Image (cartoon, rainbow, N blue to C red; front, side):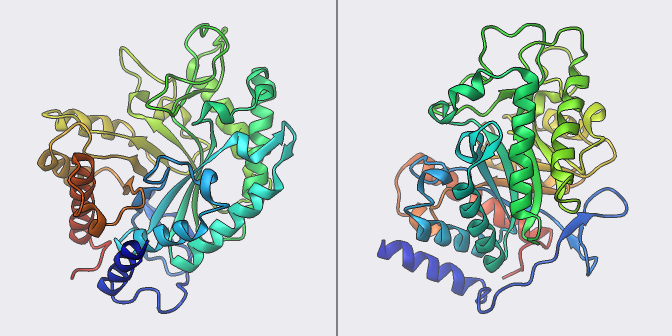
Length: 369
């Protein structure tokens, strides 16, 4: 751990002692032109620029270690801020925040409250993504057994409790209703609400198991409306969005049913997850343009996973015309640690962080050296 503490100290020094005093955060709202965001009081432009803090370097979800390794989380928040981030996307699971369909987990809500306070003191805004079922072992059997209507009601109860916990904090950038939801196409096989696993985690969820006689976007709209209404009962200020897969556009082939132009009504802005592919940057930009339906668009997930670094950087640069912000990934290893590793994954992470800072400086989100 001494090396990690040294790395944190170096990062702080390199960013002009940003934490000499507690930052003062303003709430964020959509700009009057509907294309981006501004700080509520000052009217200053706000560009979301940050990281998915979805797990640590060991692959653990934040709920797996926030009771035992709180200092590590504090260190990671410090590191993200020092790297130039202004947003951290936090993912919380339904099963960890609900002990029964109508009973929120007060202990987890209290810990979330502590995390929000940490964000305030660090100067980071939180993109709070809920209803996760990433680890199948954490999904209650009673939740899987519910009907669509029962499940939506339980999800609404989750969001009311979470929003009530967070409503007074200026550190909340937005509530993201769910990561990568899918509206059903016909009769789903079996009773599995989750999409296929990626590694040991399930990122895609179905909001229904049966399309019946309904149009897919109509199901998505009704689901969004019910959850947004549950939030607005206790919090009428913070922004609401949903994290969409890039195959949500109304095109032939695979589609999520969350067609942007159809489901945008009860959302304050749209989020899309795009991982540009090698030699297909034009296609990635065209996909991004498809999410521009009159409300701000944030690239909520991206990474040089499928494209060479130069092409990925080209994508980021060209995306600035259409996207109001970008959120990549950070898993608790600062550049100083990554440079010591001989693993390819560490080199890729380091390259990403360097591009993140380079583009951040180019658009003025990160101060020039």
